[in-house]
View 1: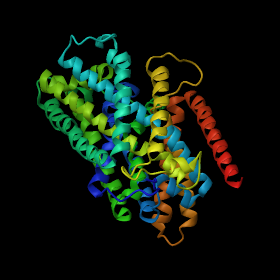
View 2 (view 1 turned 180 degrees about the vertical axis):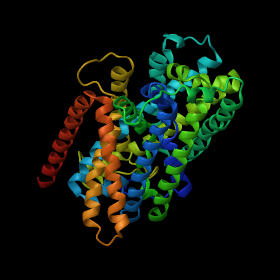
View 3 (view 1 turned 135 degrees about the vertical axis):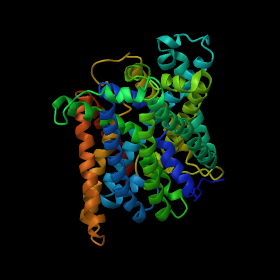
Length: 473
């Protein structure tokens, strides 16, 4: 039976909303809440401001791309928008970046987070659970058990998405609902307990905020660094556009899903961040993360159950990222671009999935998972070419948005002024702000990352040129 090259319409509005919420919420809010406190030196209000700024930037970009989602539908959202506005060559490079750097780096980090919080749950329930590196010494973070589980989760996500896309969609929906349970409980109960308990933890944490002036240089540096960290927590919504060719009534449903999902995400994040501060001191949260706050408020048993929900929510996010990852090379191949398009454009008639593109996604995700462990976790690598692969690729996507926004303003002369100029101009401002925050927050790491980025783009250029030469011959 021959393979086809067309994906069927199989997802509705609710699944699309769950994909937006599910991909974004699930790891960053747990993982980066601690980081943001560290970057703001424990200043809770400054951290809240960082969450708000990051959320506004995300929402502005969502509104800008929601316009494009109403107009351009082909195969894979962001690649479609780049191709339709700037041109086919730019669309190819955006798609190549998404397929080889953006999707796989985020998917590999989420695989690790899923493994980490699974082990946190297990070692919390069974403190004597044997680990090569004891949990108290970081075994749940860098131990061999964590890395083995990370690779297992990565393979499972690939298998589910490659074999049954409908099952992957159902997993995305159910895990999105599950992940809102610990977030909602911590937000509501944490705020109440933090206000009315004898220790008045939340009040004290706010009172302990640094007396910093808004224009102070150190305050600005801390805020920019924290906003940069929120990029990971807020990122992922653009991946939902990768299913626009598989979404029923996409011109109507995709913009709705993006906007509704974005509003839900911002509200949940800020409420959770404040709620966590009601369960532990900022010093404890900076050192140990949110786990202590959960157990302080809900007790060991319920706190551990909530840790399980956190692990499940991370798995759900990883599943959504892998869903986008498996379609990366396919989006290029159906345009006749990239290496061996006749191979990567094939869609299995039984599963209606691009299996060859999915295999490539698994391999490149494994590569970036290895890099993240050696460079960012274990500290095996140091010096040149070491950078945070959970944040810097995200900043790159904001830089790539800018030509799309500019081209939209030049090209779409039939649009009203607000849609043609105001929204994309705001998108450009927000994107430039994120790039500036990244430069301030990561310093020399940006240089090493840009060298790696350039190498990947050059490889993509050579492979695409070879493909064109083969066609001519």
